[in-house]
Image 1 (cartoon, rainbow, N blue to C red):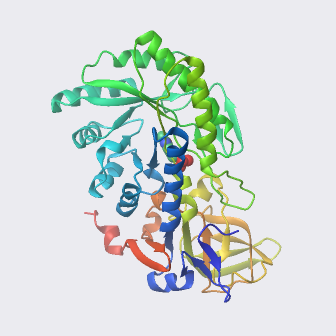
Image 2: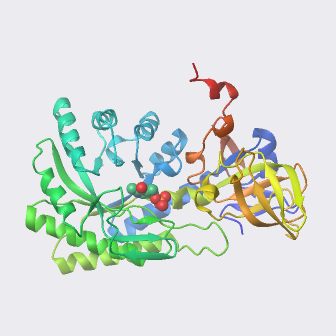
Image 3: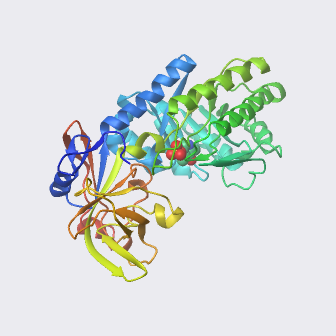
Length: 431
Ligand SMILES: *Cc1c(COP(=O)(O)O)cnc(C)c1O
């Protein structure tokens, strides 16, 4: 399997966005994150066009920056006209330093601090998505101190929870995020918001999961949310302008993954939204989504150099690379599937089965098990595909391993967007 913008040349070398993996590895060293700008921009445009087409522009995609948050990424989102979703003071700071327009930033999180909220209100973010009752009080106090009025949404648990192939409806009360509809919590929270004069509740938000392939859970969530919007209007006289349906659209990690083009999700959900609004006799609100993984996931590749090969007879072959759980924690965390290819011999038959291991002092530090590769030698470059989301952003300095550099490729050109950390960086805050 290869992702968009990738090919194998006639020397068996993996080419990403017109650049050879081998040359990138030589120029920048490994491990290396490679992001394809063309793929990122195409994905952003696909969302934007879908909103124009199916909602007549009365909606927006916000890039969920937690998937991949750097200055350059914020600049790209800005230039493509997407909004941004941030979940911490650090992501907000990155966006503001990149010159991102505050009015199209959503601020999420289940425990925003006084300082984070103060910064958000000072910058003038478009919406703060409130997650608990104390937050209303805190926002109202800070807004009062700053003499501002703040527009907020509330995070709702619609009772639909989905992951990849299956989903459940009911009883998703046990989540640290948001207010449940089914036990009256959500309505009570909305009612509570009316006590505060420095904020106004004008949006509802839900996020039902991640790496979802099925469109039905998104439709179900939309119906539940719209009924709640109606209820807010009838029972509390609160008028909701924005319905935010969150992110979660799936991508291809391995051949067996079957995501739909995200335009199809937007189209299908827009039909449900329009029909439901008609049934309920209300206007179609401004509709938004917050894709993270589906914008950057397939655009990313991680390159490693093979440094050790250990065959344990009748057990397995370990192939050790120069990165690991420090740059990709997802296999250790959730046994996530990835496609691994030998970028130096991508044209050869894949006739050996190996476990690709990282270099951390941890037996669970594996990139992937049961990987089919051609006969591989020390010094070969391995490429792990679909690492653009939640890899760099979850990277750590475990074992005092410096975080890799990030390179952006586009039409045969490449440029550094995040420098490789140095040992000096690693001790920077030590006293
Ligand atoms: C994580 C998250 C997203 C993005 O999810 P993806 O699966 O990456 O699309 C969007 N909104 C919220 C609130 C999230 O927590």
